[in-house]
Length: 196
Image (tube, rainbow, N blue to C red; front, side, top):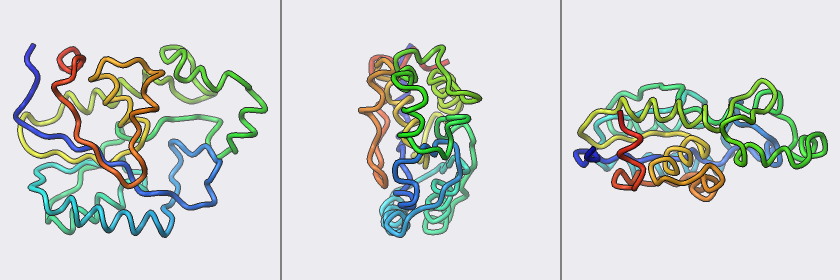
């Protein structure tokens, strides 16, 4: 199967969040940006709005939606909400301190990437469920155009890693920094397999 070359897909990680969430598990939780995060968002919006964007998506969480709305205003296009771009759902771990979670579950924390098909935090999702929903979004993208998605570290890394044929244990290295964007490599070894 040939890989789509009639488009570009840019994956943007939202800006940094408020410092009160340092050391806190906040995956799916709707936490706010820090002052620095807002500055990152405004700078990113100007940078990205200068590109000929044809489609703009965001996860719906405020830290991603706010950036998408800035881009949309600058560029004069609509921003489309797609919850499949939301961050990993940590379930009952959400908004708890990572240290407290570690003290409770110990090395089980590592199972998120060591056993991505089966391990889920209580009431959360598995890493492969995250992968499958973001792949569902990817498979429905238009065949042409410049597509921008404002999302989160988890779904960005899962999509990049899957298209590159990388295991879930390698995904964390593919997370961009807050306020950075990467272009999706649709020529990677696993890209054709990820397409319908």
